[in-house]
Image: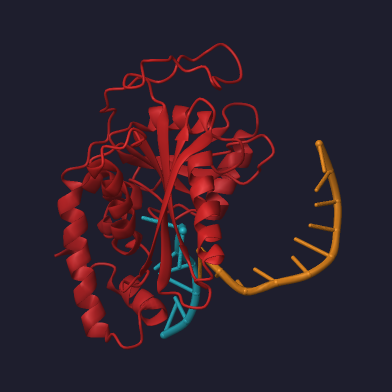
Length: 291
DNA sequence: GCGACAG
DNA sequence: ATCTTGTCGC
């Protein structure tokens, strides 16, 4: 239905990114199916806090490192997961899906797992989830099926979450973080390292806002598009990093809560869970000479 | 018409 | 995502 909208957008993507052996007509068909998948998943999305645990005590100062209530694991957020996918430089179809779980108190990795696969699905802007979600979902289910004690209470995803552009390109309003969250029924937060241009938002526009606000008020600004809706926030996660990260809602976590949690996990610009998944994913491919 | 588009 | 060198700074 909405498939015809933004079709020029899709055509561009297909010509530049899709496998050469796939015709335009076939790609178009794929994308129409993808839109329907996203639309159906979107109906199950929860955009407010919906979890049983509580945030660690906002202990007075700097950190809560190593001081999270003992014996109360199920009621206090402790195990935070991070996922990412890296690719072979030689063969772009070879991908390594990675999941890590960190102890929120120490920010140490307590679990990691990898899965090297061949991806058949091309990367199309706006449809990242269709390419990367399957591998990650498998890693999550592996943990869940074995009732692993470190199964994450919350998942940080390398990629955007909920975006609310009004009008035509409605399909971009459902990023990888949402997609994964709904399918795995787990609270998720989306972290983007670059801005996905949507709803009138641009890099330069955000930069201006960030500079206008200066260091005077908050260390983050709301990302409000032409539609007037807040898609997420751009935030300087560290004093030293001028470049912001882009935080958006995934599933079952409010934006306010997401910001609080993100702040608890930032040793560097990128939150530790995502950063560790990123690093280790790349290392895994190289160690196994799976170039 | 060209360009722009998370990873 | 990946290809890439040096370099400035704590």
